[in-house]
Figure 1 (cartoon, rainbow, N blue to C red):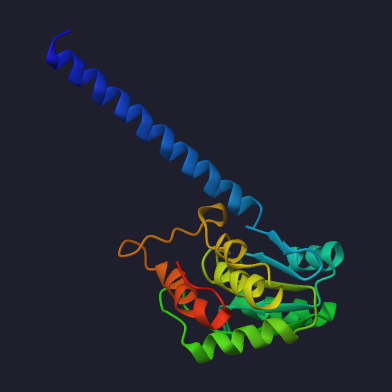
Figure 2 (figure 1 turned 135 degrees about the horizontal axis):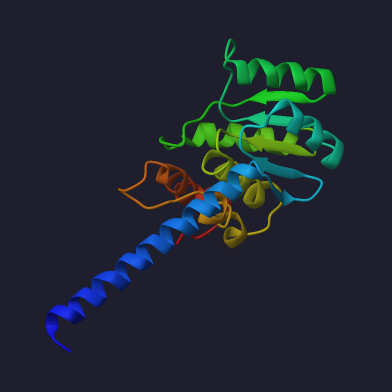
Length: 194
C-alpha cells in the first residue's frame, strides 16, 4: 500500500477515535448534569452533588434524610440560586452552612481544619455541594473519608476523579488546586503522601 494511502487511513482512523472520545465525554457530562452529579459518599452520613434546585433539596431530604447542607460556594445573598436554597432549607428544617472556597485556589491549613471541623460536627446526614459537584465537593468528600470516616488515603483520593467530573491535571486545569491541597494535607491526615 502506498505511503500516501496508509497515511490517509491513519488520519481517518485517528479522526474517528477523536470523534468517538468527544462523544463519550459529552455523553458522560450530560449524564452528570441529568443526575445533578449526586453521589453517596458514606450512606446515612455524607452525600455530594452539584448546586441543587429546591425540588432536589426536597427529594434529598425525603430520600436520604438530609439534615445539613454545606454550601461550598459561600454566602451569596441576592443570587436567586442562593436565596432559594436558604428558603428551601429553612422550610424543610435543614441547617445550611456556608463555607466559601474556590476550586482554583489551594486551601490553607486553617481552612482545611475549619472544613474538617464542620464535617465532623454537622448534624448528619450531610449534603455537600458546589456549583458542578466535581472539584470543591470532591475535596470536601475526600477530607470526610480521610479525617472523619477514616477510610484511608486511596478511598479519599478517589473522590477527586473523572468519575465525578474532576480533571486534576497539573499546569493544565486550575482545579488541580484541589488535588494539591489534599496532597499537602496528607501528613496531617496521617498519610505518607504519594
